Image 1: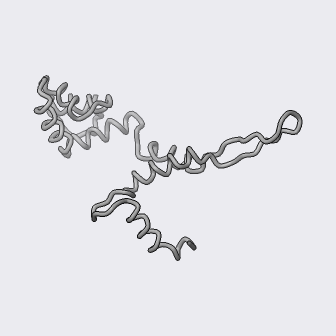
Image 2: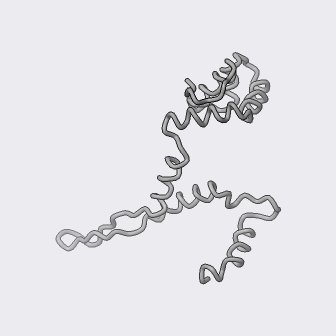
Image 3: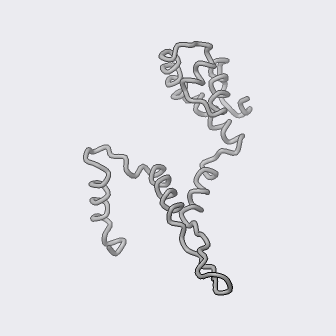
Length: 145
């Protein structure tokens, strides 16, 4: 259930961690951990449990035990940023294979990487496009644009 290096948890916390390790939401994990059928109660308890330092450490330990690490999450995104595909040019004996960037995969990876980095989160008002334009103006010299 929880790795030996995990912090001490009470029974409810341990059940919550086990349910979270199975991919359940905080609310559903809290419902399982407590046996409650009240979604409102479970939502509140799930939030409280998920912010508990010992529970967070136990969830991290369980994820690491299952091989879910930050490196494992980021590596496929890094690889996708350089994705390529084979494009066949011509027909029959004249056909040639050309390796070209796979822009659809790369753009999806950019979106995911941007979320990881917090790009697009706007805490100062305005919208993402406005912030991007300002970022671009500030970094124009660095990027030669």
